[in-house]
Length: 273
Image (cartoon, rainbow, N blue to C red; front, top):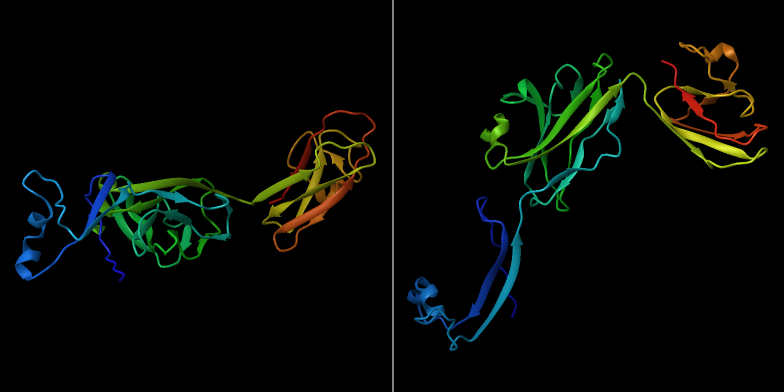
């Protein structure tokens, strides 16, 4: 027949390799069960040969591990995102996501606040439940339109007792990342990076503006693209350089190479405020 038993690993269990001895033995009355440990071994501490059966299974106890799984950590004002991560903690465990200096800069779903020693007063945080696959995530987080354009530290914290959350020195396990808030977000890519005259390159990416503009470090390198002005601010709407319309936060454009001389050129993609 089959049998199974779930065993809870205590929070204070020592890390390392462990062994569980599984035995089958005759049970005649409750007294045998009450003294089961003494029934398993002889006077010298060796498992008795009279047992019906025995087997040993091995397992490892590890320290809690937490990591973030976000694709990007740079966000523009007004942009929404989630904090995501994974852990080796069991399903149902609680991860607290803590936002240092997050007050008045983020609109956070299901947010709570607390004075956390070592972090700050009125610190926003949210509770996340670990799923069956070890994944945790927050609800939607919006960067406020007037959020300070700087960096913010975000912590994913596990504590044995929720009271320990309020003192950073008492946190049992945690990981941190730094996110950056910018006025406008722009990620641009170019391929291929080696071409000959007459070939085309593809410029693509994502941004929070409605149109991006392309410049090069020299004139007459790409069709329709102007040389980057020597001084800023730039006025691409009037200087005639190539603009690319953004749709659903993404842009893409193939551009013909017109450079006469072989060499290395720099391409700039500009997202105006």
